[in-house]
Image (cartoon, rainbow, N blue to C red):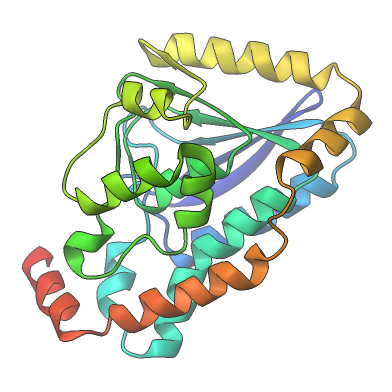
Length: 249
């Protein structure tokens, strides 16, 4: 199957789905499509609430595209690469509609950032999380503000330092990333559907104002996340990272 990003309307619910055959990794073009689709959904008056999900029943999102990562050859292209998730996270926080995350499977790196940038996130017990960036010589700099804001600095540092370990869905729930965890996809989808329908029946102006309150004091993220992308863009060119990436190829 080919990568895609789609927006489907179901009454006043807008469902955004992304997919990539490589464990729902996100290459730059898919990230750009996802950013634009979130902006589009935010401007659509028929949509009152958004559901963000990925295709398939396994991995939610494996993070940034590894093929693009190994091909980076300059600080500029490195910054542009890592800015992909920065633009998506900023689009999510600035979107005037509440975003429900539907996480059916594992989330790694930028995938954890996507989950953290939703306003309310539901998952299955298979949705373990991992921040593996430090193990290859970079770090989760771009997604850190979103993850720390949702899970706290202690959990963020714990996952970052123990970079090769997956943390369970229950851990993610205990730390505030997931609002609830379900035994399987069927129960997850029913819970997402029920919540989305309830929210879509509420006063849209109240939802919009509440969203603004949830994301207060984050206006500086437009600049902050791009500065973080610069850091990763430089580190990916280091001899350590280049040698480490060769072992994965």
